[in-house]
Image (tube, rainbow, N blue to C red; front, side, top):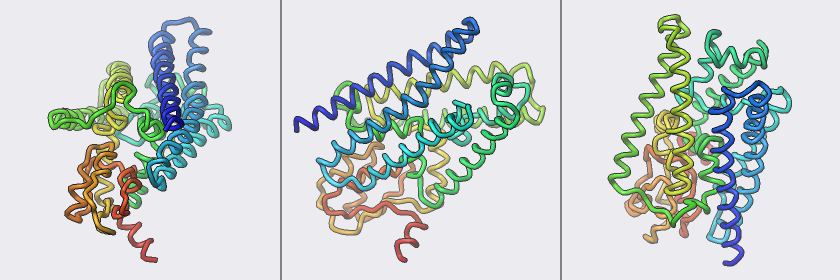
Length: 354
């Protein structure tokens, strides 16, 4: 127990360092650098990318190792280990391998499909601030490279979600909030013992979900129309800044606030990409099967669910968990003492038969 407590404490320390550095460095990069002299601005931008790529990847690897050590003491870790492997491979590719081989440190901007960010659409617009600031650094080939990568990643995530469920992106690849919710899970929240959201809080999060989704769709439609020359060019810079502010406050800072005081998956309740993926996962038949053995009503599955789904209620009725908030993390599957739970999709059903 003493070793477990030390591991959890280490996770909390690493997460605090991650959050504090992120707030300070991101604030300097997005707030101070645009008004600083050229040398200072270049250093701050470099430091931000170094932090986002190298330091973040190091934290993912170390935290994954510590979290698996903690979780192993409580039961199975089959799906949890796969989650950690997925995030580690994703980070090594996006944050280390691609920047090293191409000299471009911003590949992580292109790993989250629409409507999460319109960065790729802005890069297609030669008059946008994003294009004019990156094109001289990346060159035409570099711009085309990240756009091709973005297209491949989008197809992979969307098709992969239909085939393998929301688990693929939200619990194995997401380098925005999903990774932190998994690799730092035993340490969250940093303050207090944490609690499941009340019905009122769930209602507020649901409202936030559709509000942020509507905003994200608006930006997507606006920048698409901009590429067609329909929208006023004078508004492009203002809307680009507005989207950046929404990202920094409504997404990045709020996600971190949830890590500190609420739930690691707090942002996942209203992530606009998650809203799209939940629909694709439903098409693919994502569900938690609950009838492989007998439910003993221990409630462990419900207790560990980071999305506050009452898995036990489904299991008692032997009904599949087909919930729009399910991120497929597999915590409930791993913690079930009778192994009556199983994560699956239509494709995985077919593969298991063979």
